[in-house]
Amino acid sequence: MQWQILAGLRFFLAWIVFCNHLRWFVPSENFLLKFNQFSAFSAVLGFFMISGYSIAHSISKKSEGFYKRRLIRLYPLYFLGVIVSLLPFFFLESQIQTPYGEFIFARPGWKAVIGNLLFMKGLIIEPISSNPILWTLGLEVFCYLLAPFLIKLSTRKIYFLVILSAFTYVLYPHLGLPYYSHLKYGLGLVFLIWSWLLGFLYFREKTGPNAITVKVLIIALGCVLLGANGFPEARLEIFTYVLSCLILMYSTSIKLPQKLLKILDYLGEISYSFYVFHIPTLIFGYYILEIRNALGLVLISLLTSILFYYAVEVPLKRIRTKSHLTSIS
Image (tube, rainbow, N blue to C red; front, side, top):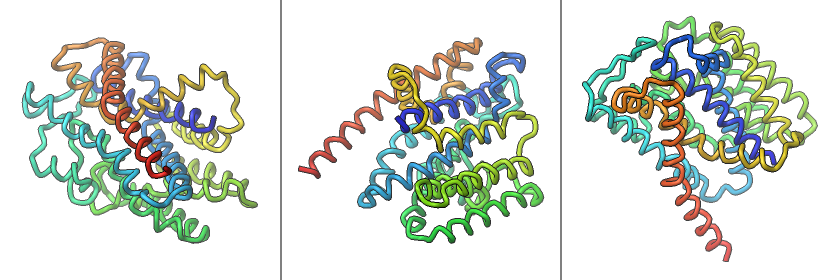
């Protein structure tokens, strides 16, 4: 039951991020934009924390083939996410300004495309403006690369890394640096890995004698950091973070009807493709299909995520399952 509830949480966090970008295409008074109060940034922190937890589970359960499993899970849709980001510019000008929010989508050069395909954003390349959310997946990949080494560290050393990253996070707004998505040289990872490490740490300590201490630390530290360096216009940003923590910690205690669990599980299944493709879909829907209705933009974004889920993720799941059964036999 735990993973089904976490799947529902993942979709809710993706929905918050979606609504944050929907504001570029609809008037500010649209009722869907009220979800922006939950804070897209806190949603990203929630994603990182869930990722840290699930990666610790994956590598602890089976360390062999870890990188291969992560690559198959992440890269096919990520690759398509970069490619699909280029499609609107075959129909539109090289620069597009959003009708609301004053954001500009620009056609990327070949260096930017190749750099993003090779996960060089955050190191030497900036994200593609027509799909800027992919910067978070770049940080995820760095965390995946570190996971086999982190799993060997003592809990005390993990605590030290959390505190070190949290300290740099507090310093960030005083350094005159651009937003996290535009940082280079791995600085984004330095500033934000504390949230991923908290999920990683919780998996290791959740059944130990320090479980309560770790729970208090995770919630308290996040609240303090968001209070010191957050986005005050998003009034519910701390609520979103705390909600993510509580669901992660107590999902096994949440009892829901089986039908609702199946719905949450399905929403979680499509959440990755929804997250990866929603910005290019919004651009395509608004400028090329001329969809001006917010609900229409929501519908086409969901349909796109479902399409890519069945076209890419479902076949890959079958291949992984077949490979697993073959290795057992």
